[in-house]
Length: 241
Image (cartoon, rainbow, N blue to C red):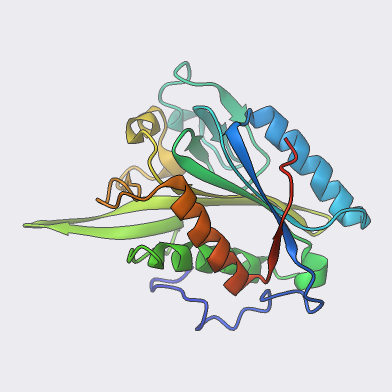
């Protein structure tokens, strides 16, 4: 990870398109999607992509309030195990929260066609989020040893860094699934039931918490425009659930 802002222009990332200009399918679910149903749909789609029977997909949705435990999750970081449902997840990372007001984007891309470079893929996801935040004049940054995208906040005599977006992915047969989550307007108090991503010295924030009255539709538009700059064109499709 880098201690400076990433941008689409300065990365030279090999994942900028697959070379065949085939658009990525782009789906948005309405309502709340249960986590087990989302995981089942992702796994089925990733398998179909690997088999060559389905195209790449980015799926935007919201979950009801829940916690997920990535493969590096530590039991002590689940502070309130009875507060919301807790789901084991095969993605990378530790504990995270999903819920209303948070835009989750599940990313199912074929890295065999885009270049089998996991680091480049994660950096492209970072660049995607940071470029989308720039649409709202928010400077997102990466920090060494801290997964996700962070914003620096300053006041009279104080400063801190809060997390605004999380990244957690899994690869199977070089097809990605799981993805990112961007805090638009979630209840930030819901994060207190866990140690988010194992970080005890930093907080969480959202676009609305930063004083920006951003709607979910506006966040979606920024994510879509930025994704196309980083990964290539998209085309609308129906959500799998």
